[in-house]
Image (cartoon, rainbow, N blue to C red):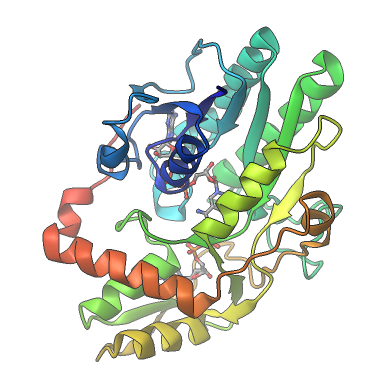
Length: 325
Ligand code: NAD
Ligand code: UDP
């Protein structure tokens, strides 16, 4: 039996990953400081004796004997990562150092959840892994973007210098059940607004584009990446290449819910990338023809059901994020 450590295991992506690893007969340790993650995301796993949930902040060292480490801990939405930007960059940089140090010591494989944000506001479209990006180093998104870029550097240096077995995935916008209802991301915001017949808030013109990947497709790609042989280190893009404007997304969500919401345009947010779409040629080549299989309408349906249920059983206020310095 293999043992995996999942940092950020009580978060949106982390909780789905823990579920999948348990289904594959792994023993799983989930580390989380519960800043944006929540025990409710893994409540159904707690009765499984192969699952362990540990309150821990990855800016501090952690020790356990495991075969694989999935380093996901980091607030991911602009609202959350800008709440305490110094903590955000510490989580990316110190967290990477701690997990790489652990991997080195116990000879585990370690996978970094990097992001399409390393491309910044890209001048190359769609984004290929060989593109170095166009990132503002001093803006309000920099704590996240530069933190993730530095983490990639650390992963590569531990690999070159200490032969640590690393994997880097660059995740593009991912959505699905267990997204934080207060995280301000576009899919969760629009669905919650539409379900409540409140105004749909589009920042700027709404002509900026994003490509939305359903959570199950990401988890499949992540598992396949960890399963590649040691020569495959990445970075590899994992995302859905179908591209939508934010205006299009708003209309789709309103139509699917049959909502009476009106669209309102608010001022644009600072450093908001104007376009984003992954080139997934490399992922297909390295990950046994991996590609997203879930259409936006199908994924949105499941996500709408989740938020509909959540709004019926709890209030958004119950999901306030916590200050955990
Ligand atoms: P999330 O906020 O739901 O999950 C992050 C988890 O990390 C939370 O459970 C949070 O409590 C935990 N965490 C934060 N700081 C921590 C710390 N210092 N120590 C321990 N735990 C800490 O977000 P998510 O969408 O699940 O993102 C998971 C990872 O994937 C992040 O690293 C994020 O950067 C990356 N990613 C996500 C997306 C996306 O679209 N969701 C896109 C690109 C990259
Ligand atoms: N966005 C929006 N209204 C919202 C939330 C987000 O128009 O209520 C826009 C945001 O400005 C960005 C896009 O949707 O252009 C995606 O934002 P999100 O925060 O989901 O992800 P990211 O910017 O990290 O891709």
